[in-house]
Length: 149
Image (cartoon, rainbow, N blue to C red):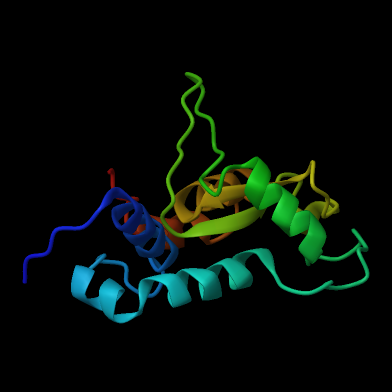
């Protein structure tokens, strides 16, 4: 099938493709389109950022309160906020996760300042650095490298 689309449609398609990268890791266009662009993007955004008021706003647990999660996603531009030693930002939109900068398992709090959006690979990189004796590095090697666009 061939189709010509405008910029707005192409932009929405890229957002949905990135948002569905956990469900459709190969980015198959037919599968992405079948999922229904607008409706699916809306559903993923609700899942990522939360909906409603969320929990009590406490920073004592692992859970990032909805209001704070939304701020973190917007602050980080809905892309991986990892910055390499040479100053380049990753910027991937593939398999994004919230990252506790100070690990929760080591007593870190769940706050806006101590949370970041990162891709799965960079979250695993941080975990391997923070927990060198853990099994995270072996598991992380099996994850796909984020595609370049």
